[in-house]
Structures are given as structure tokens and as C-alpha cells.
Amino acid sequence: MRLFLGAAIAVASLGCAHPAPESVSAPALAPPKTAGALPVSHVAPWTPHARAAIAAELDGAFRDGIFAQSGAVAVVDEAGRPLYLRRARVPMTPASTLKLVVAAAALNTFGPNHRFETAFVALAPPDDSGLLGELWFVGGGDPLLTANDLRGGIGALRRLGVRRLMGPLAVDASEFR
Image (tube, rainbow, N blue to C red):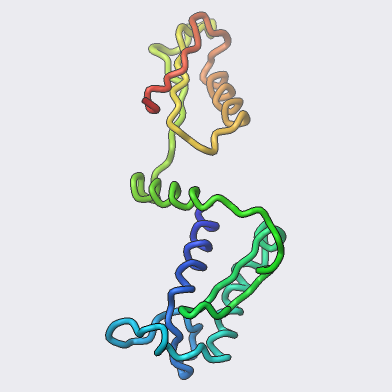
């Protein structure tokens, strides 16, 4: 997700960039070093060199993976002229842009190093025969939690010596109130 979000933000940002001078050898992805933005009517057109640099950079980013098969990109300059098109005229179902807002809000709220935690919690370890009393499944909001993850958690309980649950299994969803 992070890579896709980064690519989507990069595409959105490129549409706002001013063309770099032709003498710059690096890809023209940064605005020129001028004081303030230029009005659209006074923006110099993108040079063939700048267009080629952007196309090479974006082709590299969008060549592989699922995006190569199912994605499309249109990057335009400030006046709406196309700078880069990749499958831009292929009809497709639009993606929800709300997921970008949610992802940005989650990154802002939790930070990039946050890890969602899901746990099985008991008041005491299992007895010598592997019997365990009440067990709580405490969800932490992990959007990627799968049935395989739950099976792995049950396997971890088994490795800790749990052979049978004698009390109820309670689900703690208090994180979501």
C-alpha cells in the first residue's frame, strides 16, 4: 500500500511542477528556482528533454506489477497539456479516491512506523494439562488481518502449551467504540 500511495502522490504532484531548465541533466521533476509561481499564461512549455525524462521516470515506476495490467496515468502541465500518458484512453472503473484520504489520515494520526496489534490475552497461563480459562481476542484494527493470521495465533497458543479452552472466548472490540 505504501508504494502505491507514494506513486499516486507522485503522479498528483507532478501535474503541479513547473518545467526545469533544459540545462539540468537530472529528470525535470522540480520547479525552477524562481521567486514565486508563474501565472499559467507565462509558463514556458515543457521541453522535449523534460518530457522524455518524466516519461522514463514514470515508465520505470508503472512498468511492473499490477499497475502495468490494470492502471492508467495521465500527467498534464499547468495548462492541461499532456506530459505523460500511459493507457490514459483505456476505459476502466474509477478507483475510490477516498482511500487516499483515509491512508493520509492514518499516516498523519499513527505515523509511518505504527504497527497494528491483535492479541490473544488470558489472565493466567495454562495449567500442567494444557487447560486454559477464559481467553480474550483483542482486536487492534489491523486492516490486513486474515484467517491465516488467526490460525497462526492459535498455533502460538498451542506452542505455549494450551490444549483446551475451558472458559469462554471473548472478543474485545473496545478499540472501536
